[in-house]
Image (cartoon, rainbow, N blue to C red; front, top):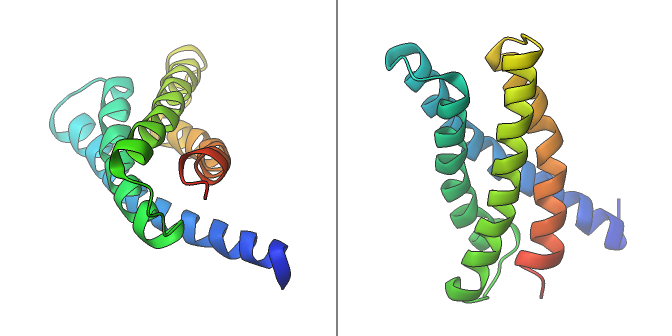
Length: 130
């Protein structure tokens, strides 16, 4: 792929790669809190989501979007996007786990898969827009 479409694709791949690092933070907190701490899966998912969001902000700002936007400008936008994802994550996890009986890890994979596109588009075109 070349041109603008190729650049967008490569940036998305970078975003997804960074997201995997954040995902490890998220899922580590989620499973550790549930399995070792006896925390409710939905609550543990929210805590894990926040841990992953912090990792993602740092890495996306520097590596994926190469933003020079000041933290005071980019940070609130990034965390507003993360907050919107957090709300969607919590609502979808509640629906899938508590109401539909989906195993919490399967539900989290489903939710995460949908939210990756949401976060990429908002961060590219709003948070780190040049």
